[in-house]
Length: 262
Image (tube, rainbow, N blue to C red; front, side):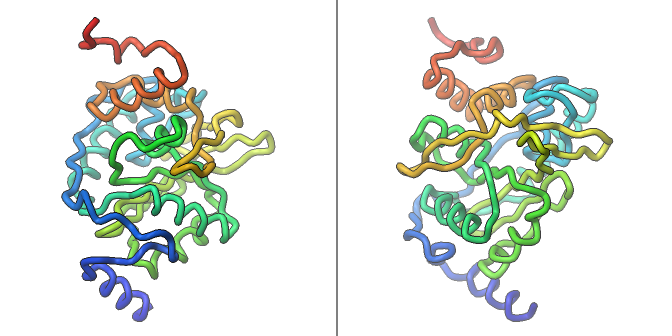
């Protein structure tokens, strides 16, 4: 324990930390933290999907997280704003780091799917904006295996809301947000809820995309699109949804059409 703690301290003070698990050299640009605003008021329905990404709340139901009431969604909106304030850091998660993590987890026998902003970029096949976090859907049974290689590298647990989710951060490499599921016989993933019930990722919600020319597993267009609805979108959300709809030749959801010029 002391050895690991000392190593974490040395890495966090190193102004030029090396790549995780021996991956490609990380870029050093973008050192100022992204000031990510709250997601606004979360409504019932698809907003529940977004709830679990930044707070320990998901609802039962279909890909849109349609299920138990909207009060949990609103509570999650507060949870997301709290996380944005308390977990600021200077690191950005670069493509090289994403692939290094994917390789490391794959080598440890851990299955994962990329969600969130990096998941959007994986679906369209190119990086379109900077990311200071990486959302990953993983099996609940793999939590111990996930933490084991990360802690010696300087990552620490910043949020622990298991069995729903947990967050690990690094002062230079950004934030990893793990969404934990129990896989079922049909290939879906069930995420338990603090208030009871669960949200189920349907089997078709797990797909593949590419990052820096390499195939990676990620969450599907349909689930991503539904998860971006039911609340007031931010500039990042608008960027991601417009990008997805353009790439997949789908119409914009109603909430994303407002304010657009003809």
